[in-house]
Length: 128
Image 1 (cartoon, rainbow, N blue to C red):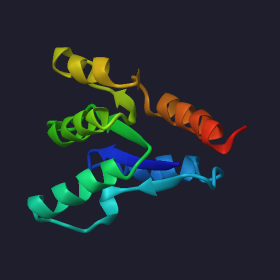
Image 2: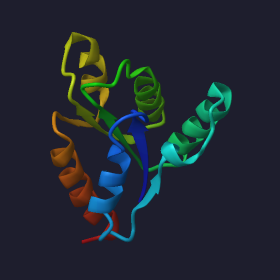
Image 3: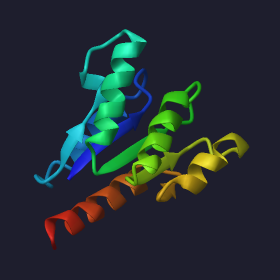
Image 4: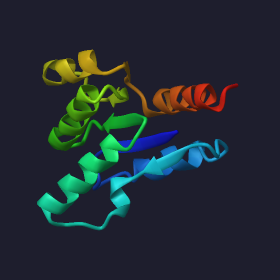
């Protein structure tokens, strides 16, 4: 199972937490945009959208202190258009994020709950 990690890049390094907590599931491959190293918006946008396209699941984390979430909403919308499963963790939970919440496959308000669901989903891909 390939998981694209969508969300903020500046503060918490949440992607590492997700990868570490799911490391017992060797069938999971993470596509982590934190690792691409691009600073040019055109380059990282192409890379990110290719990552979404090549994933099975988009794990999108909208942190409370994420200043906008515009990149996440683009990636989630693209994933939905491609028929991908989208796991959204929305800590903002306000009127502006309702459309993303409603369009996502499943939504949680807490990162740990989203990680637990992701781990259970990996068992489906494992055939357990």
